Picture 1: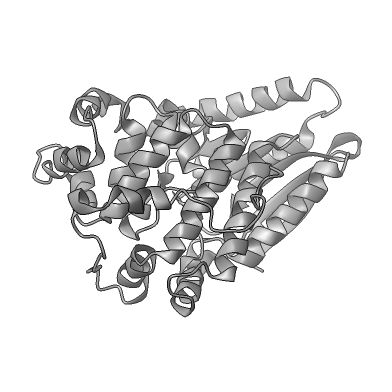
Picture 2: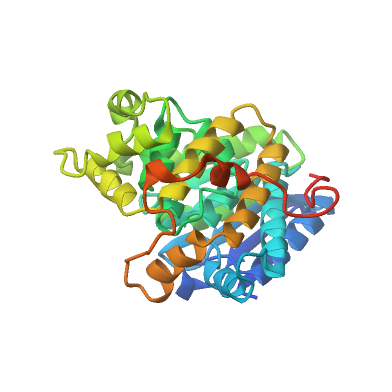
Length: 367
């Protein structure tokens, strides 16, 4: 199952629930059984009056959670070319239901987001009420590389970043360090990688019957005070003005042209993002543009419902299986995109990714 649960006893019978992702060899990437087990346990803990707080973490030094198990999905896509494989319908529904549960959790839910936090890991992290980053944190949405798009609520949090930063990060798959995450409201606290035990010890010692939020805030503030000296330099807010000017364009092909022109720029992070986009999936770039445009006026539940349609449609089309083949399976890093020219992708193809591919009510209508 690759996920474990424990409960630690605190004062007056209060208990702290700890959920640990335990798939270290795959950087704690989410599999279907992990998603199902996490969702069931979080549901049970929400209903248990003695559980006062939950900590979600990943075991191993390299990652909280680096995405989802897309290889298994792509195997299913290949068995059902041009169709939505049954596994995809279940996987995305369960994953988005879990993400939505975290966003709406009724108790303090702390996410310890160290190391790589990519794709599906961002889906888990961004809904938590207290998102902790560390000096090793590297956040990102790298789906442009594999022909998917920034899902798991990416439409929600990218659309809410300042200026054009959400669009830029979605197109260039740039990594976000701890300072950036705090700047962009993608994290709440900065602690050192070795402070997790101190945090747990503090949580157990709190009196959860008396002003728990104030006590929890004081604990986190004290720990963060010790860590502040090791905060890395900000990368993205200082570049916001240039990025806003760069992407002040009317359509995605213009944004693609403006960004990819920076491949040899003297500003290394911008040049790296430009190279990533140039080698990325043109269809994904259109989906990023459109999902951010649409998500600005959607509720959180409607964002997940929109992404569900997008994800199932990505499984019907050739780009996602080809991207995973090139980057993760054969690792030749030479994807042969079905639509290689960003300016030649029919608008109908883009819009088709937002259409339902199921009969009857929306599978996530109850969110």
